[in-house]
Amino acid sequence: MTATQILFLIAGYFVVLILISYFTGKEDSNDAFFKANKSAPWYLVAFGMIGASLSGVTFISVPGAVETKQFGYLQVVFGYLFGYIVIAYVLLPIYYKLNLTSIYSYLKDRFGVVSYKTGSVAFLISRVVGASFRLFLVAKVLQLLVFDEFNIPFAITVIITILLIWLYTFKGGIKTIIFTDTLQTLFMLISVVVTIVFLASALDLNDISEVYTSVKENTMSKVFFFNDVNDAQYFIKSVLSGMFITITMTGLDQDMMQKNLTCKNLKEAQKNMLSFSVVLIFVNILFLVLGLMLTEYANTHGITAKKDDLFPTIAMLPEIGVLTSAFFILGLVAAAYSSADSALTSLTTSFCIDIIEIDKKPTEIQKKIRKRTHVLISVLLVFVIIAFDAIFKDVSVIWELFKAAGYTYGPLLGLFALGIFTKTEIKDKYVWIIAIIAPIISYFINAYSVDLLNGYQIGFEILIINGLLTFLGLILIRRKQN
Image (cartoon, rainbow, N blue to C red; front, side, top):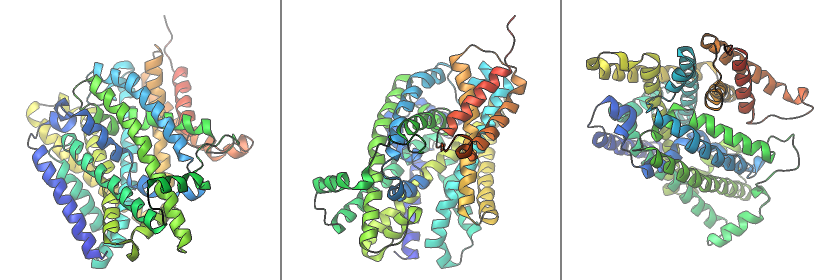
């Protein structure tokens, strides 16, 4: 595809999103923006959450990792299922019982204002860095494929990227996103299926049964790893990590939970969560199958691209065809924006509810405050993305920063675990200190784990360690019982 064709394709895509925004954003109220008036159909929320949980990073990285990691990632996905069950039957009942708009309000009721603000700030840091990183990668791809052709600076590409999100979310907020995420998930899945169909034909696999047999007999389709406990892909480590990643990065994340809180009642929210968790397994299997077939195609045709470069390189080859390339672009943009648009809305929600406490402001100015906050968060994302490009010339450095931001979920895990599973009262004013120390210790444990633990390689379970350290730290500042 030419740069002009890609530009028109993306423009047409955003015209559709803005049209959806027009029809869903007619009620320009804070209740619609923050909670979709608690009237969102559970099945739309469930389907749209697939796209939101699979970012542009996942869209590119999961298929690209199959050559070295095989299907081991599926163990983590199985862990996700157990995590979603915990969210459905432990966290959601609490959120609905308290009728929360921001889930971090729970910490205020349970421990106090400092805990509440600490949880909110932890989320804000994680989401600003995470959303900026995802959008940075997509903006880089768009710059390479489109905007370099027209000599448009990267900073302008970033501004356009954020402006487009702002345009279709500034009125309807989460109410609009419920519908746009559904469309974006659909595009993403079509992109994967279309590419698999092309690859199957190119590899002389004529029907589904032949594709199944080919995948099953391929050494790269190995799922379970039981032999080496030091391996980052060891089964128990992977499943437990997947479970706790889900509990923290979905159940304790305002972005993901805000969608669930738009359902009419707890029963529908639970139905949404459980159906979504099962469908997500099959979607991830599709991505892994795609990765295997991309690798086989690359090996057959002498393509040297590896990891994150594999999918984009093959998808944009002339012999792939315009249709497959078009759906790749749509899938990539959809995967990136389905997580980024909800991040922008949830950041606005958390800042309004948790930091400036908009509900305590005069009613007549609440909407104005929300709109100004939405603009300011958009501007912040622009500056952070441009800073990434200026400061970090090596993308792998930003990837480390992205992972480091994930450490802020550890304190959330510790705080919520202590609040839900114990009756311990703590000295609220010291919570922020624990929330800083625990991630720092976790980082050094992770960095030196091989030396300290006789070759044991820590994987995703660093999140569990982080949460445990926070939990123990909070126990140290507990109030003495009279």
